[in-house]
Length: 439
Ligand SMILES: *Cc1c(COP(=O)(O)O)cnc(C)c1O
Image 1 (tube, rainbow, N blue to C red):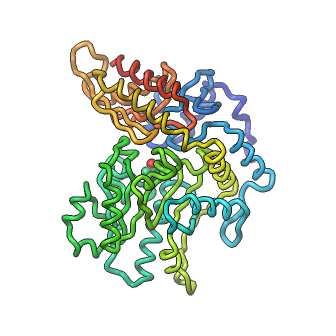
Image 2: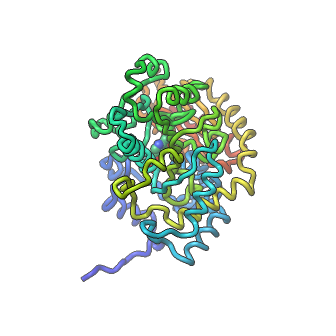
Image 3: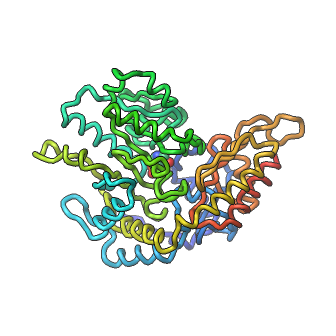
């Protein structure tokens, strides 16, 4: 007997949802023993509009991390909603293996048109940021094989970089907490801290490098840590001089997050691979794209054994492509990039006010992405002595002041949807201030 679905999700109350969740679900990056504890009440989000989220009890929050860095133009945007509905009325998903559909090639053209420089001419679709990077990795590996450059096996990656959770992408990452357990010999990765360190490795080393990968301008998951100005340009020059491919992971930085459409524009850099995900659909649906050049693409042309044997069941999902096209249209119609400078300034001003607070060690900003690094105070009478878990405690407390976000270690991340208002930016920063003063 097949059990029938005995609950419409929307007929459940908070207690019923919590019970089912604790019984059946395993959450990402989560110690489930803590989640399952009776005392833990999961946040149940049920609605959202613009930069605001609502939970099942009707409480409102500013979406302070753009729903894990995905949302761009706000939730429930009529333009994206309509685009998805239009596509849905025709078909939700068709295979991209052996067939195509209208939205994907149009989206590919639009991405190529907006990509930095003239060189990024081909788009390979996948599902998420990890796969966007995985695709570039696979292309780079096979490209060297096809060219008979067997000596170029290694990848250069940066310390405290994050490139995703699939095994290949995780091996390129340098955040031990996340990938300690799967670190393997493949692909071979040389991790460096700076361009100087890279240069010091010399030209013999450079001749063994396949590609260098970096999050341009700012490392996101390391706690919103901007690179020194000019560093990306120097890496691009080093790569060019040494015949090394340049892979840019713009999974977080893409689609206006740093103030320009793509972060690499700010240093006039055009990579061999531009990897996009998170914001590509405006934060609606899982979709990713890896853009590359004619040089890479053409190396794969010829007989069947030159084929890139890679793809996923939902590659170029039509609903995702429709959402992505609508999101790009909104950039034009609502002059989104032009609207950013005053917001970025407002964020800088509000962050400046946080700088002097007793619990704040440092604030960091790149465009509308920011990190507020906390330090624990150990004087008597403090609710939370030392630094441990202060970030989580402050984020929890900030919910009471109408802000929802997550910490990375002891850094509170504020990374806003681009539609956020200056007032909402100030309110969010005040919520962090008020919350931090409790500890
Ligand atoms: C989020 C992120 C990824 C991984 O993307 P997923 O969609 O979570 O797989 C990769 N790189 C960067 C810089 C990211 O911020």
